[in-house]
Each structure stands twice: as structure tokens, then as C-alpha cells.
Figure 1 (cartoon, rainbow, N blue to C red):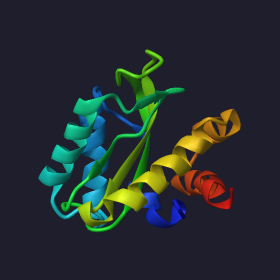
Figure 2: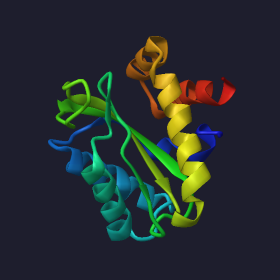
Figure 3: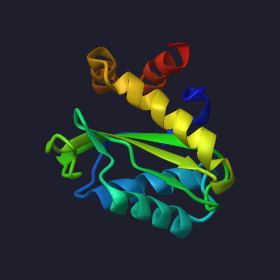
Figure 4: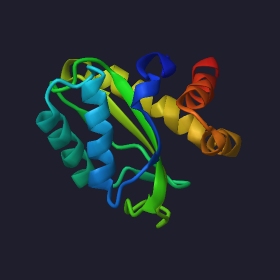
Length: 153
């Protein structure tokens, strides 16, 4: 799965101010909507909330990967945010989140695309150097370069 191909610099948020996971997700969904990936925010946000209700998407390492499968999403996409301040996400390791990957896929693509994206990101996040490179990225373009390492591995 080519992750960098379903992202763009306008859905990468560095220093995103959010006091809760809901606020962080809403800001990211707003960006995805502006960029044409999301047609119906209410449907997509409902899908994300439903998924979060089944169990946390805070995977540890200060990272969360919220996601939703919805016909409110027009095309597969991934937004990234580095939060200005840590947010409680009820993560597996009990630590707050500073990095968020938000995955959106149309309901019709749900199975394969959704899992391929989730697996590709999760595998890379296990590597400390990948997480450090994301933390040190200064611009959205830098983040895209780090993300391209997912595509090349």
C-alpha cells in the first residue's frame, strides 16, 4: 500500500492544538474535507466514534491510529497530526498521545485498503528510528518523506 500516495501536505498538521481526542479528530477531518477526501463529515465522524467505542486506537509509543470505514469518505486517505500538547487517548501503555494517524476509507473499500494501511503504518511505528524521524520533521514535506519510507520497505 502506497501510504504517501493517499496523503498530501494539506492533511499533515504539525503543532495541532487539541485538548481532547475528539477535538484532534475533528480538526483532522475538517482538513480531509477541505481536501476533498471526505464528503460527509457526520457519517465519517460517527464511524470513527463507533470504532473508538470498541476499544482504544492509542497503540502506545505516544501514537494513536483512529480510523473509520464510511460512505462519507470519497477516497482512501491518511491524515497525520503532531499535537502541540499530549492528549489522553486511553492508550494501551497508559501514556498520552502526541502523534495521530487518521485513516479514512470508503465503506466499499473497507476490507483490503483499510487493513493494508493499518498494517503498513503499525509495522513502521514499531521502529524507534521511524518514530524519531516523525518527531523531528519540521515541515509537512518532511513528514511525507518519512512516510515514504513505509512505501519503500
